[in-house]
Image 1: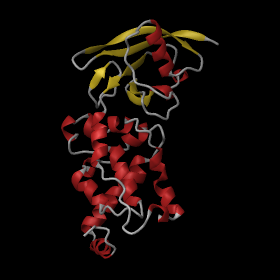
Image 2: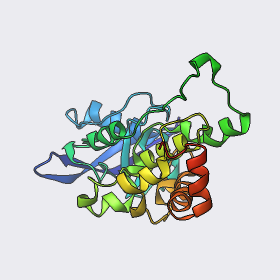
Image 3: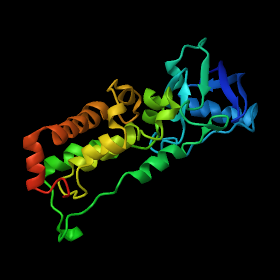
Image 4: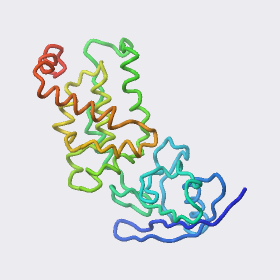
Length: 253
């Protein structure tokens, strides 16, 4: 197995101060960035803080910014970098730093709790739920989310404007609202309008930056956010849709 020394630059610090520290580190064939971070912990930086779990791209724990791009460290292969290219690893920029590469992502848990859960229809027992396969397939894509929060981190609505966090759920949780809004058995009410009025859907200007960084390749913008915006507009301003909602009790009134 061939190996070589590679120049890594890793952010070290806490919520008060920090800096980028340079490390020459051995890299072996077939390794990913997380392998190198673990080797740094074992050799030159035993106190380096990093969050990780599965190392298989399914837990979302090892999110970081690698050369300025939000990525999973376990899914970023070292052979994608030139041997002379400096690899800079920094914490997610949109969330407060706890220490080194570990950030406080509790913002996302707060937003998750604000989204009303699936509301089953009255008079239908769980074993009696029936859905057409086309309805299952429509929202199945969104269930692949591993909650790495890369989409939340890269969304410029919160990345560049800290003051928006209170009013904006972010792409991950607007996608959750879209999934529930598409569910034919959800009896919660008008989730699209709720997303617009209570969770900041209007802040999203569909730049697709969330879709670009999703490690599960979910088409967040095209398949969730844009349809949710269209439904919100229809239900608020289209008189025929408004009447249909009233007739079929989609508005909950």
